[in-house]
Image (cartoon, rainbow, N blue to C red; front, side):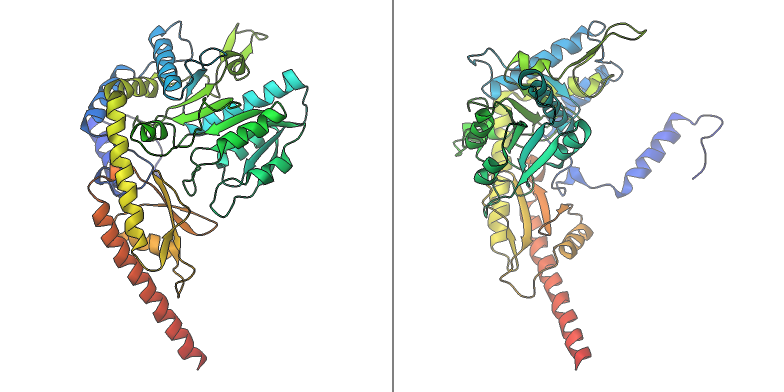
Length: 422
């Protein structure tokens, strides 16, 4: 790789090279990507593009300098709190901050839980209790902030085993985690039972709704059966919800909500014992780009409740057709009884020869279809959204052909091996 040139390059030259660099990126605009980028349609693109240009250079580190960003943050947080039934709580309205994404929201919630446990319960060796399906970001938070992780298994239906979690909760528990829904198989944990566990020892209960925060409320409005999971559930302390996923805002912006302003206070770092004066930061970052915050505000304001209901209708219809189509293909299955927008494709163990799922992923990728890969068990992960509207039938046709091809290759390999043995 050549070093940085002594003299700069022209704008057209620079942009042309950046355009060339994208040649091998996933084709999300074609609907062939099950995750990573979420397409809310032309109107969403236009309003986000214009908001991005307005706030390309603004910095949310100090909202005294940029009071518009303070207003944007308050309004997006309040809109989200209202959506998640946090506006009319007995303790007062829920409070929160915008972050750069789900990982940061989770980090902030775990940090706040640790600080609260220390301040209110004198805990010096904090623990976090979660199921093995909980997002890796909780383990990152525990690593960064010095919590011991207590991990419970999942049940046969892939939901958190709450009875096993109960065995792990104790006097040092700072936070207990539930997911709505969890990422790997897309099923929803029993948030009511998990929150009750947390309450039993005075710990925080965090609900990871990074994937579901902008789906489940609208699914409920559409008449889908959604078990209560948000601030309607007693004992739920904090919730993370990503606007840059199924909220259809550009990367990266998420919301972390606290049931009370007192809980939110534990997230904020305040310091003045240096030569630079008063410093306060509500999350992991210091300087924060105003661009994603403004884009989130613009997209939410543009869509409104009706727009999100419509996008969610398309999303859930796509997911229903996805699961129904997979059920008709021999050799593969969807893990768990997911009812929303996440699905994990795995080999059907009753089918022989058992399909190599990552070989299937390679075959699909050759046709332009991108899935994240996860294990155990080996599976292809799909976050289905409005992005995939209009291409589900094409996908299922390719999936059937690729599955048959991988089975054929497996059978050929077995025949070759038998011949070698003979």
